[in-house]
Image (cartoon, rainbow, N blue to C red; front, side):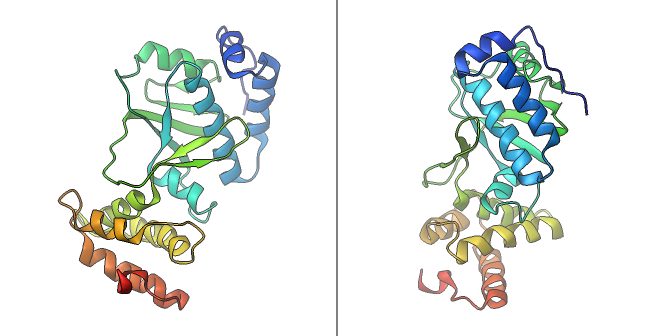
Length: 226
């Protein structure tokens, strides 16, 4: 994979992010060579968030990408999904192209290939959970993750509606597995509230999957006491 090492935008972003053009180029080369797929995705997400943040745009990792990071690669998404956090206005397409061009991105205007991975920068993030967003420390700056409570209920919904989805169910079980083990701390009352809310309405389906996970791991079911 050939990574562009020079860009007309590199110098400006280097000043804002505190990274020289040489360091940005070196970071891209290192990401392209990274063999661990989870670490590769984390490094690239960190760098993409840093260059958008330099222009005053905060991004949050969502969907399968966020589940990959929460599960430390037990589930692999294969791409990076990002949404805009609390935008005053949508990101202008020209600006997105310029920012991703600073990283040698190919494609657009919402999906690019960078250093061997696909990066999707979507619209405003949709949040129903009351839980705070999480921060993940990464090499080029913190990555913001959508709340694990929201992700778990969202993935259960996808697993059962509009029709059974085996891949989404497996993904939900991976995230719920690290939650019941306590590896990722979650608010089970909030998960229950979300699952019962009009936005999701999947509490019976959630209970089935959580029980299945707990039985497999021989762990007390956290929903039994909530």
